[in-house]
Length: 261
Image 1 (tube, rainbow, N blue to C red):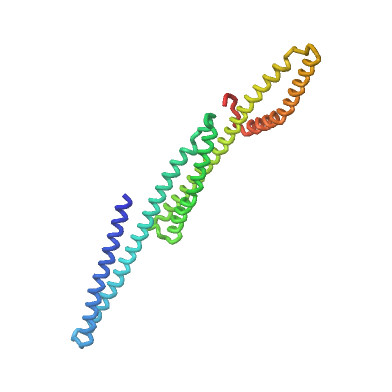
Image 2 (cartoon, one colour):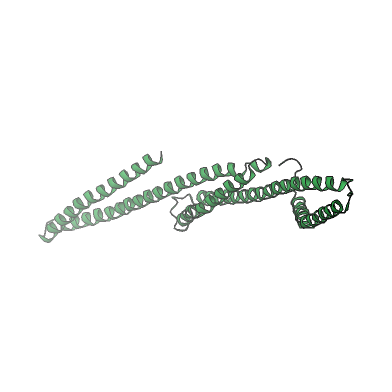
């Protein structure tokens, strides 16, 4: 797994540092001996100096190669970290996308609690937006600093894919939120229609009554009742207007489904 790769990289880097340090001491000792021989007018002083310069030059190039190798291993380690974080983010997005694409709004049962649950889901997405941006920034930084061990194009493609997946998730979540709001409106509408239907039934039965009063007292009583019914009708007028407006908005949004709430 990723942890094993990271451990191996760290071990290799430690060995490289150790190897450089060990050779550094040997080379320094060799150079000191050569200098001593040259300064004591050794008969082969010129050859010794040439040989020393040759060894130091080779060691310089070898050390540069070892340091570059160590640096590339560092890049590989950072690349591994990005790859791991990107995998984690993509798995998380895929899991959340399933929830965002769930069509629970089609069933009007418990629509209010479904709406509240989705609001919590949207808050979770918002809370993780920085995490997504951090992974995208990390990948872009690797590309900008050319620390992708030659895989810049692959990292760029991965960044594009993650950004697209994230946008798809947030779009689907917004769509679901809108549909749940509309379903909640419809539930309110259906409940209000039931109330109005019940009230209309009561008013109709009162108006159908053929009792027109037998004496003055009963006529006055009926008149009062009739005035109360008229006042009640006026009071319900605004509710009926609101219901009509709500019905129009539901029809326009294409979310209206007739049937029980």
